[in-house]
Image 1 (cartoon, rainbow, N blue to C red):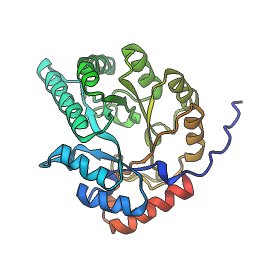
Image 2: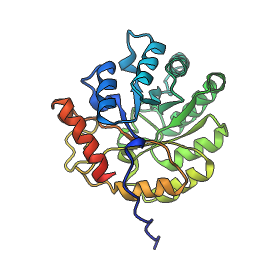
Image 3: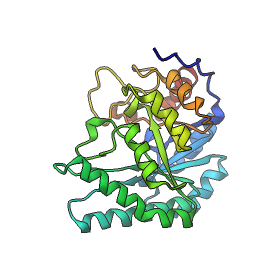
Length: 281
């Protein structure tokens, strides 16, 4: 029997990051002001919030509020049924890298993609080739890429990378200091190999990001019904202990997709996020 990791100490708000998608109804300017006022220290920016804005000026605004820009979401979606589709995806990832550089984000999180009906092995090969194709831009911009494995329920169209083992394999194959992994508890909590693969990720020096939320029972929507921490069944403190046993001292990033929570008062919701972080992460 694998011994349990020691209980993780209570989290420090200085390591709390909130994704803009978590408070989706807010414009990025509103999110920045509210996050800073609530004591949130970091922000991960979703690309949709940058539409129509000067990216560099937006980055300056976030820093003026005292927020650390943790990462940019998202790149990826490399697989395509045709060479033209794959080339288009690579071009979009190059734009994401340029946006991250202009924003001042050190990291782009990758949702790697898949093609319905295409063998997963082929999609994984195209993901490997797509990441390799944009590494020169990463090196030039000083931006890293975090491969985020997604739950197997998304293997048809959102990601052919579904376990941390597969993400770690890609990191080893690419053998680049610009490439690592984002561990999201929503996608990985069920995996019996999670503890050992988190440890492997640490040995590779590849653990770049850690995302938290919860899994509600019953889940009524496979995309937009994530729970706030403490609303579900994910052993959050156990997983954080495994993550921190690797030496990871980065951000605890709250990433919640929830139609239910987006419909509530977002100021009240943000207060609940901070409290749930204190109580359950």
